[in-house]
Length: 329
Image 1 (spheres, rainbow, N blue to C red):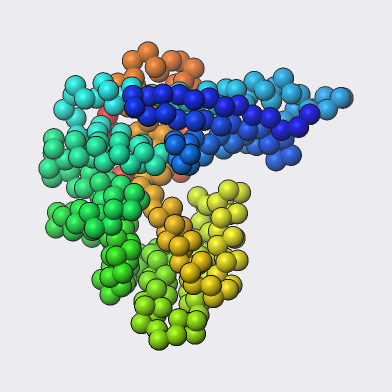
Image 2 (image 1 turned 30 degrees about the vertical axis):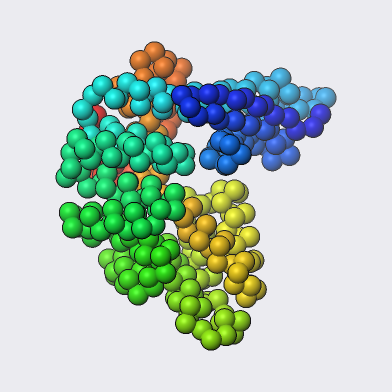
């Protein structure tokens, strides 16, 4: 029996999503991908220990696990819009911020922008919502608006390395190289181990050199781009096959000086690396569904979150922001 999969089309308000789930038997993995109008939005992956009997694989077991995972992704997506609809009745800026994060994680930028704006309408001093709004504009390639939003946030809070890195990217995508490099360097000064900012600084130096070159073909990709790209690749959060494949493909591309090919791929990858509170996504999701999801949050659904909380608690003992977010609710 060959690999097999599932497909569903779901309509939520004026949006139409296509959910594809495939079981990759040779890799012991189930992958779900979500698309809208042919555009890729997100991917979910689930590793399985595929049972075997005397005849071969247990396909009944595989079919059941695949169907459950497929339905979980659908439920997760539908629940966000259910929460959004119910949350409209309440004045709770932090909940709008958390919902904005969840939409942002799924590349649903229209929804994330709306939630961050609502959060700021309810609490104009909520700086994290400004940063979330700026990142939403950044990832949706509205770079001028992103820069203006980050500028507002800069005047309201401390200069955190992540924020400076995002702000630097907004300048870089507008070809404002000096401003971008200054922000990346400040982020690195505050956190010398911030390899994502080191990588972005390398890209800024590369693009700046190309911009000022009389003969672009004579410009080589700076070694620091590959050096720090490898260091980003080695971070624990990227040690999964999907990410490793993308890192290695980009590293292979950097071997050639085909600037017209390299630059768009680098830019796309830089935006993909931008990620807000990736370690807290499921916490936000659980509590929003708990507070506003109604019957959507069944005992079975609650049990699915339990293992995530246990793992996060063990990993996040020394991160006060994590515990603050838990206590918010």
